[in-house]
Image (cartoon, rainbow, N blue to C red; front, side):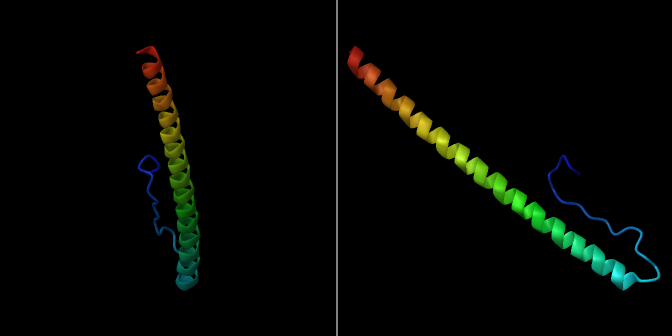
Length: 74
């Protein structure tokens, strides 16, 4: 379950005396967990985009250096 990176929920042990209240509490908990999961996914995506952007900038600087070194050595 955790290895797949997907949320998982199971309705177990619902209170037989107050099933509506129990289900409502479960739904609120699921709502909260999904909101936190989405926030985490957004943070991860932003971090990956920032890393990708930095890598492209670094690659550009390396290519400029390589081009200068090739032009100077010719």
